[in-house]
Length: 211
Image (cartoon, rainbow, N blue to C red; front, side):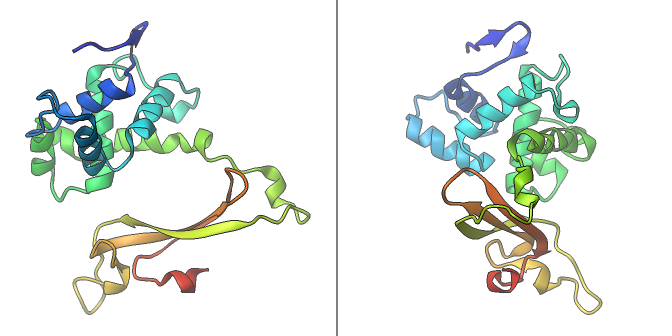
């Protein structure tokens, strides 16, 4: 397998990134002549984000000036890319335990929980400084009026209990039938700008009661 590289940085074309990321998964064999459409569907099903989003994130991590997101020389490698993809799998699939998560990627339990996973989750999260930019003029009392579209976004979490039951249904989202938190995101229709993000709210809270 060939990889494009610059200096010692592990850089991938989107197509090679897709094949490499699928190759990390036990039981998935992208090298078997599978069509590109099948590979795209399998990639999104396992990692949640599109191939282009993942490839851009990896490029940004390798070139960012954001201290919290910077990678070491050891992390800008094929092994680092695997840990990066494991973090995406973790955030999307939310595996129930470390042994099954580790076996999916052929790594030991120690690398499938705690800091080895959240180290990469935090690296990805740190990119928000570059990717989510709040225009200062939006804080002005004389700011522009935005034409917006509003939607709710649900994110899986551990199921919570209350004083009476071992599972609090108000903390659960019907989208997952699982514990979740909900955010309300308002986007401008005329430009790539977020008007606001409200949350987190309980997963069982109705969208109409948030707005």
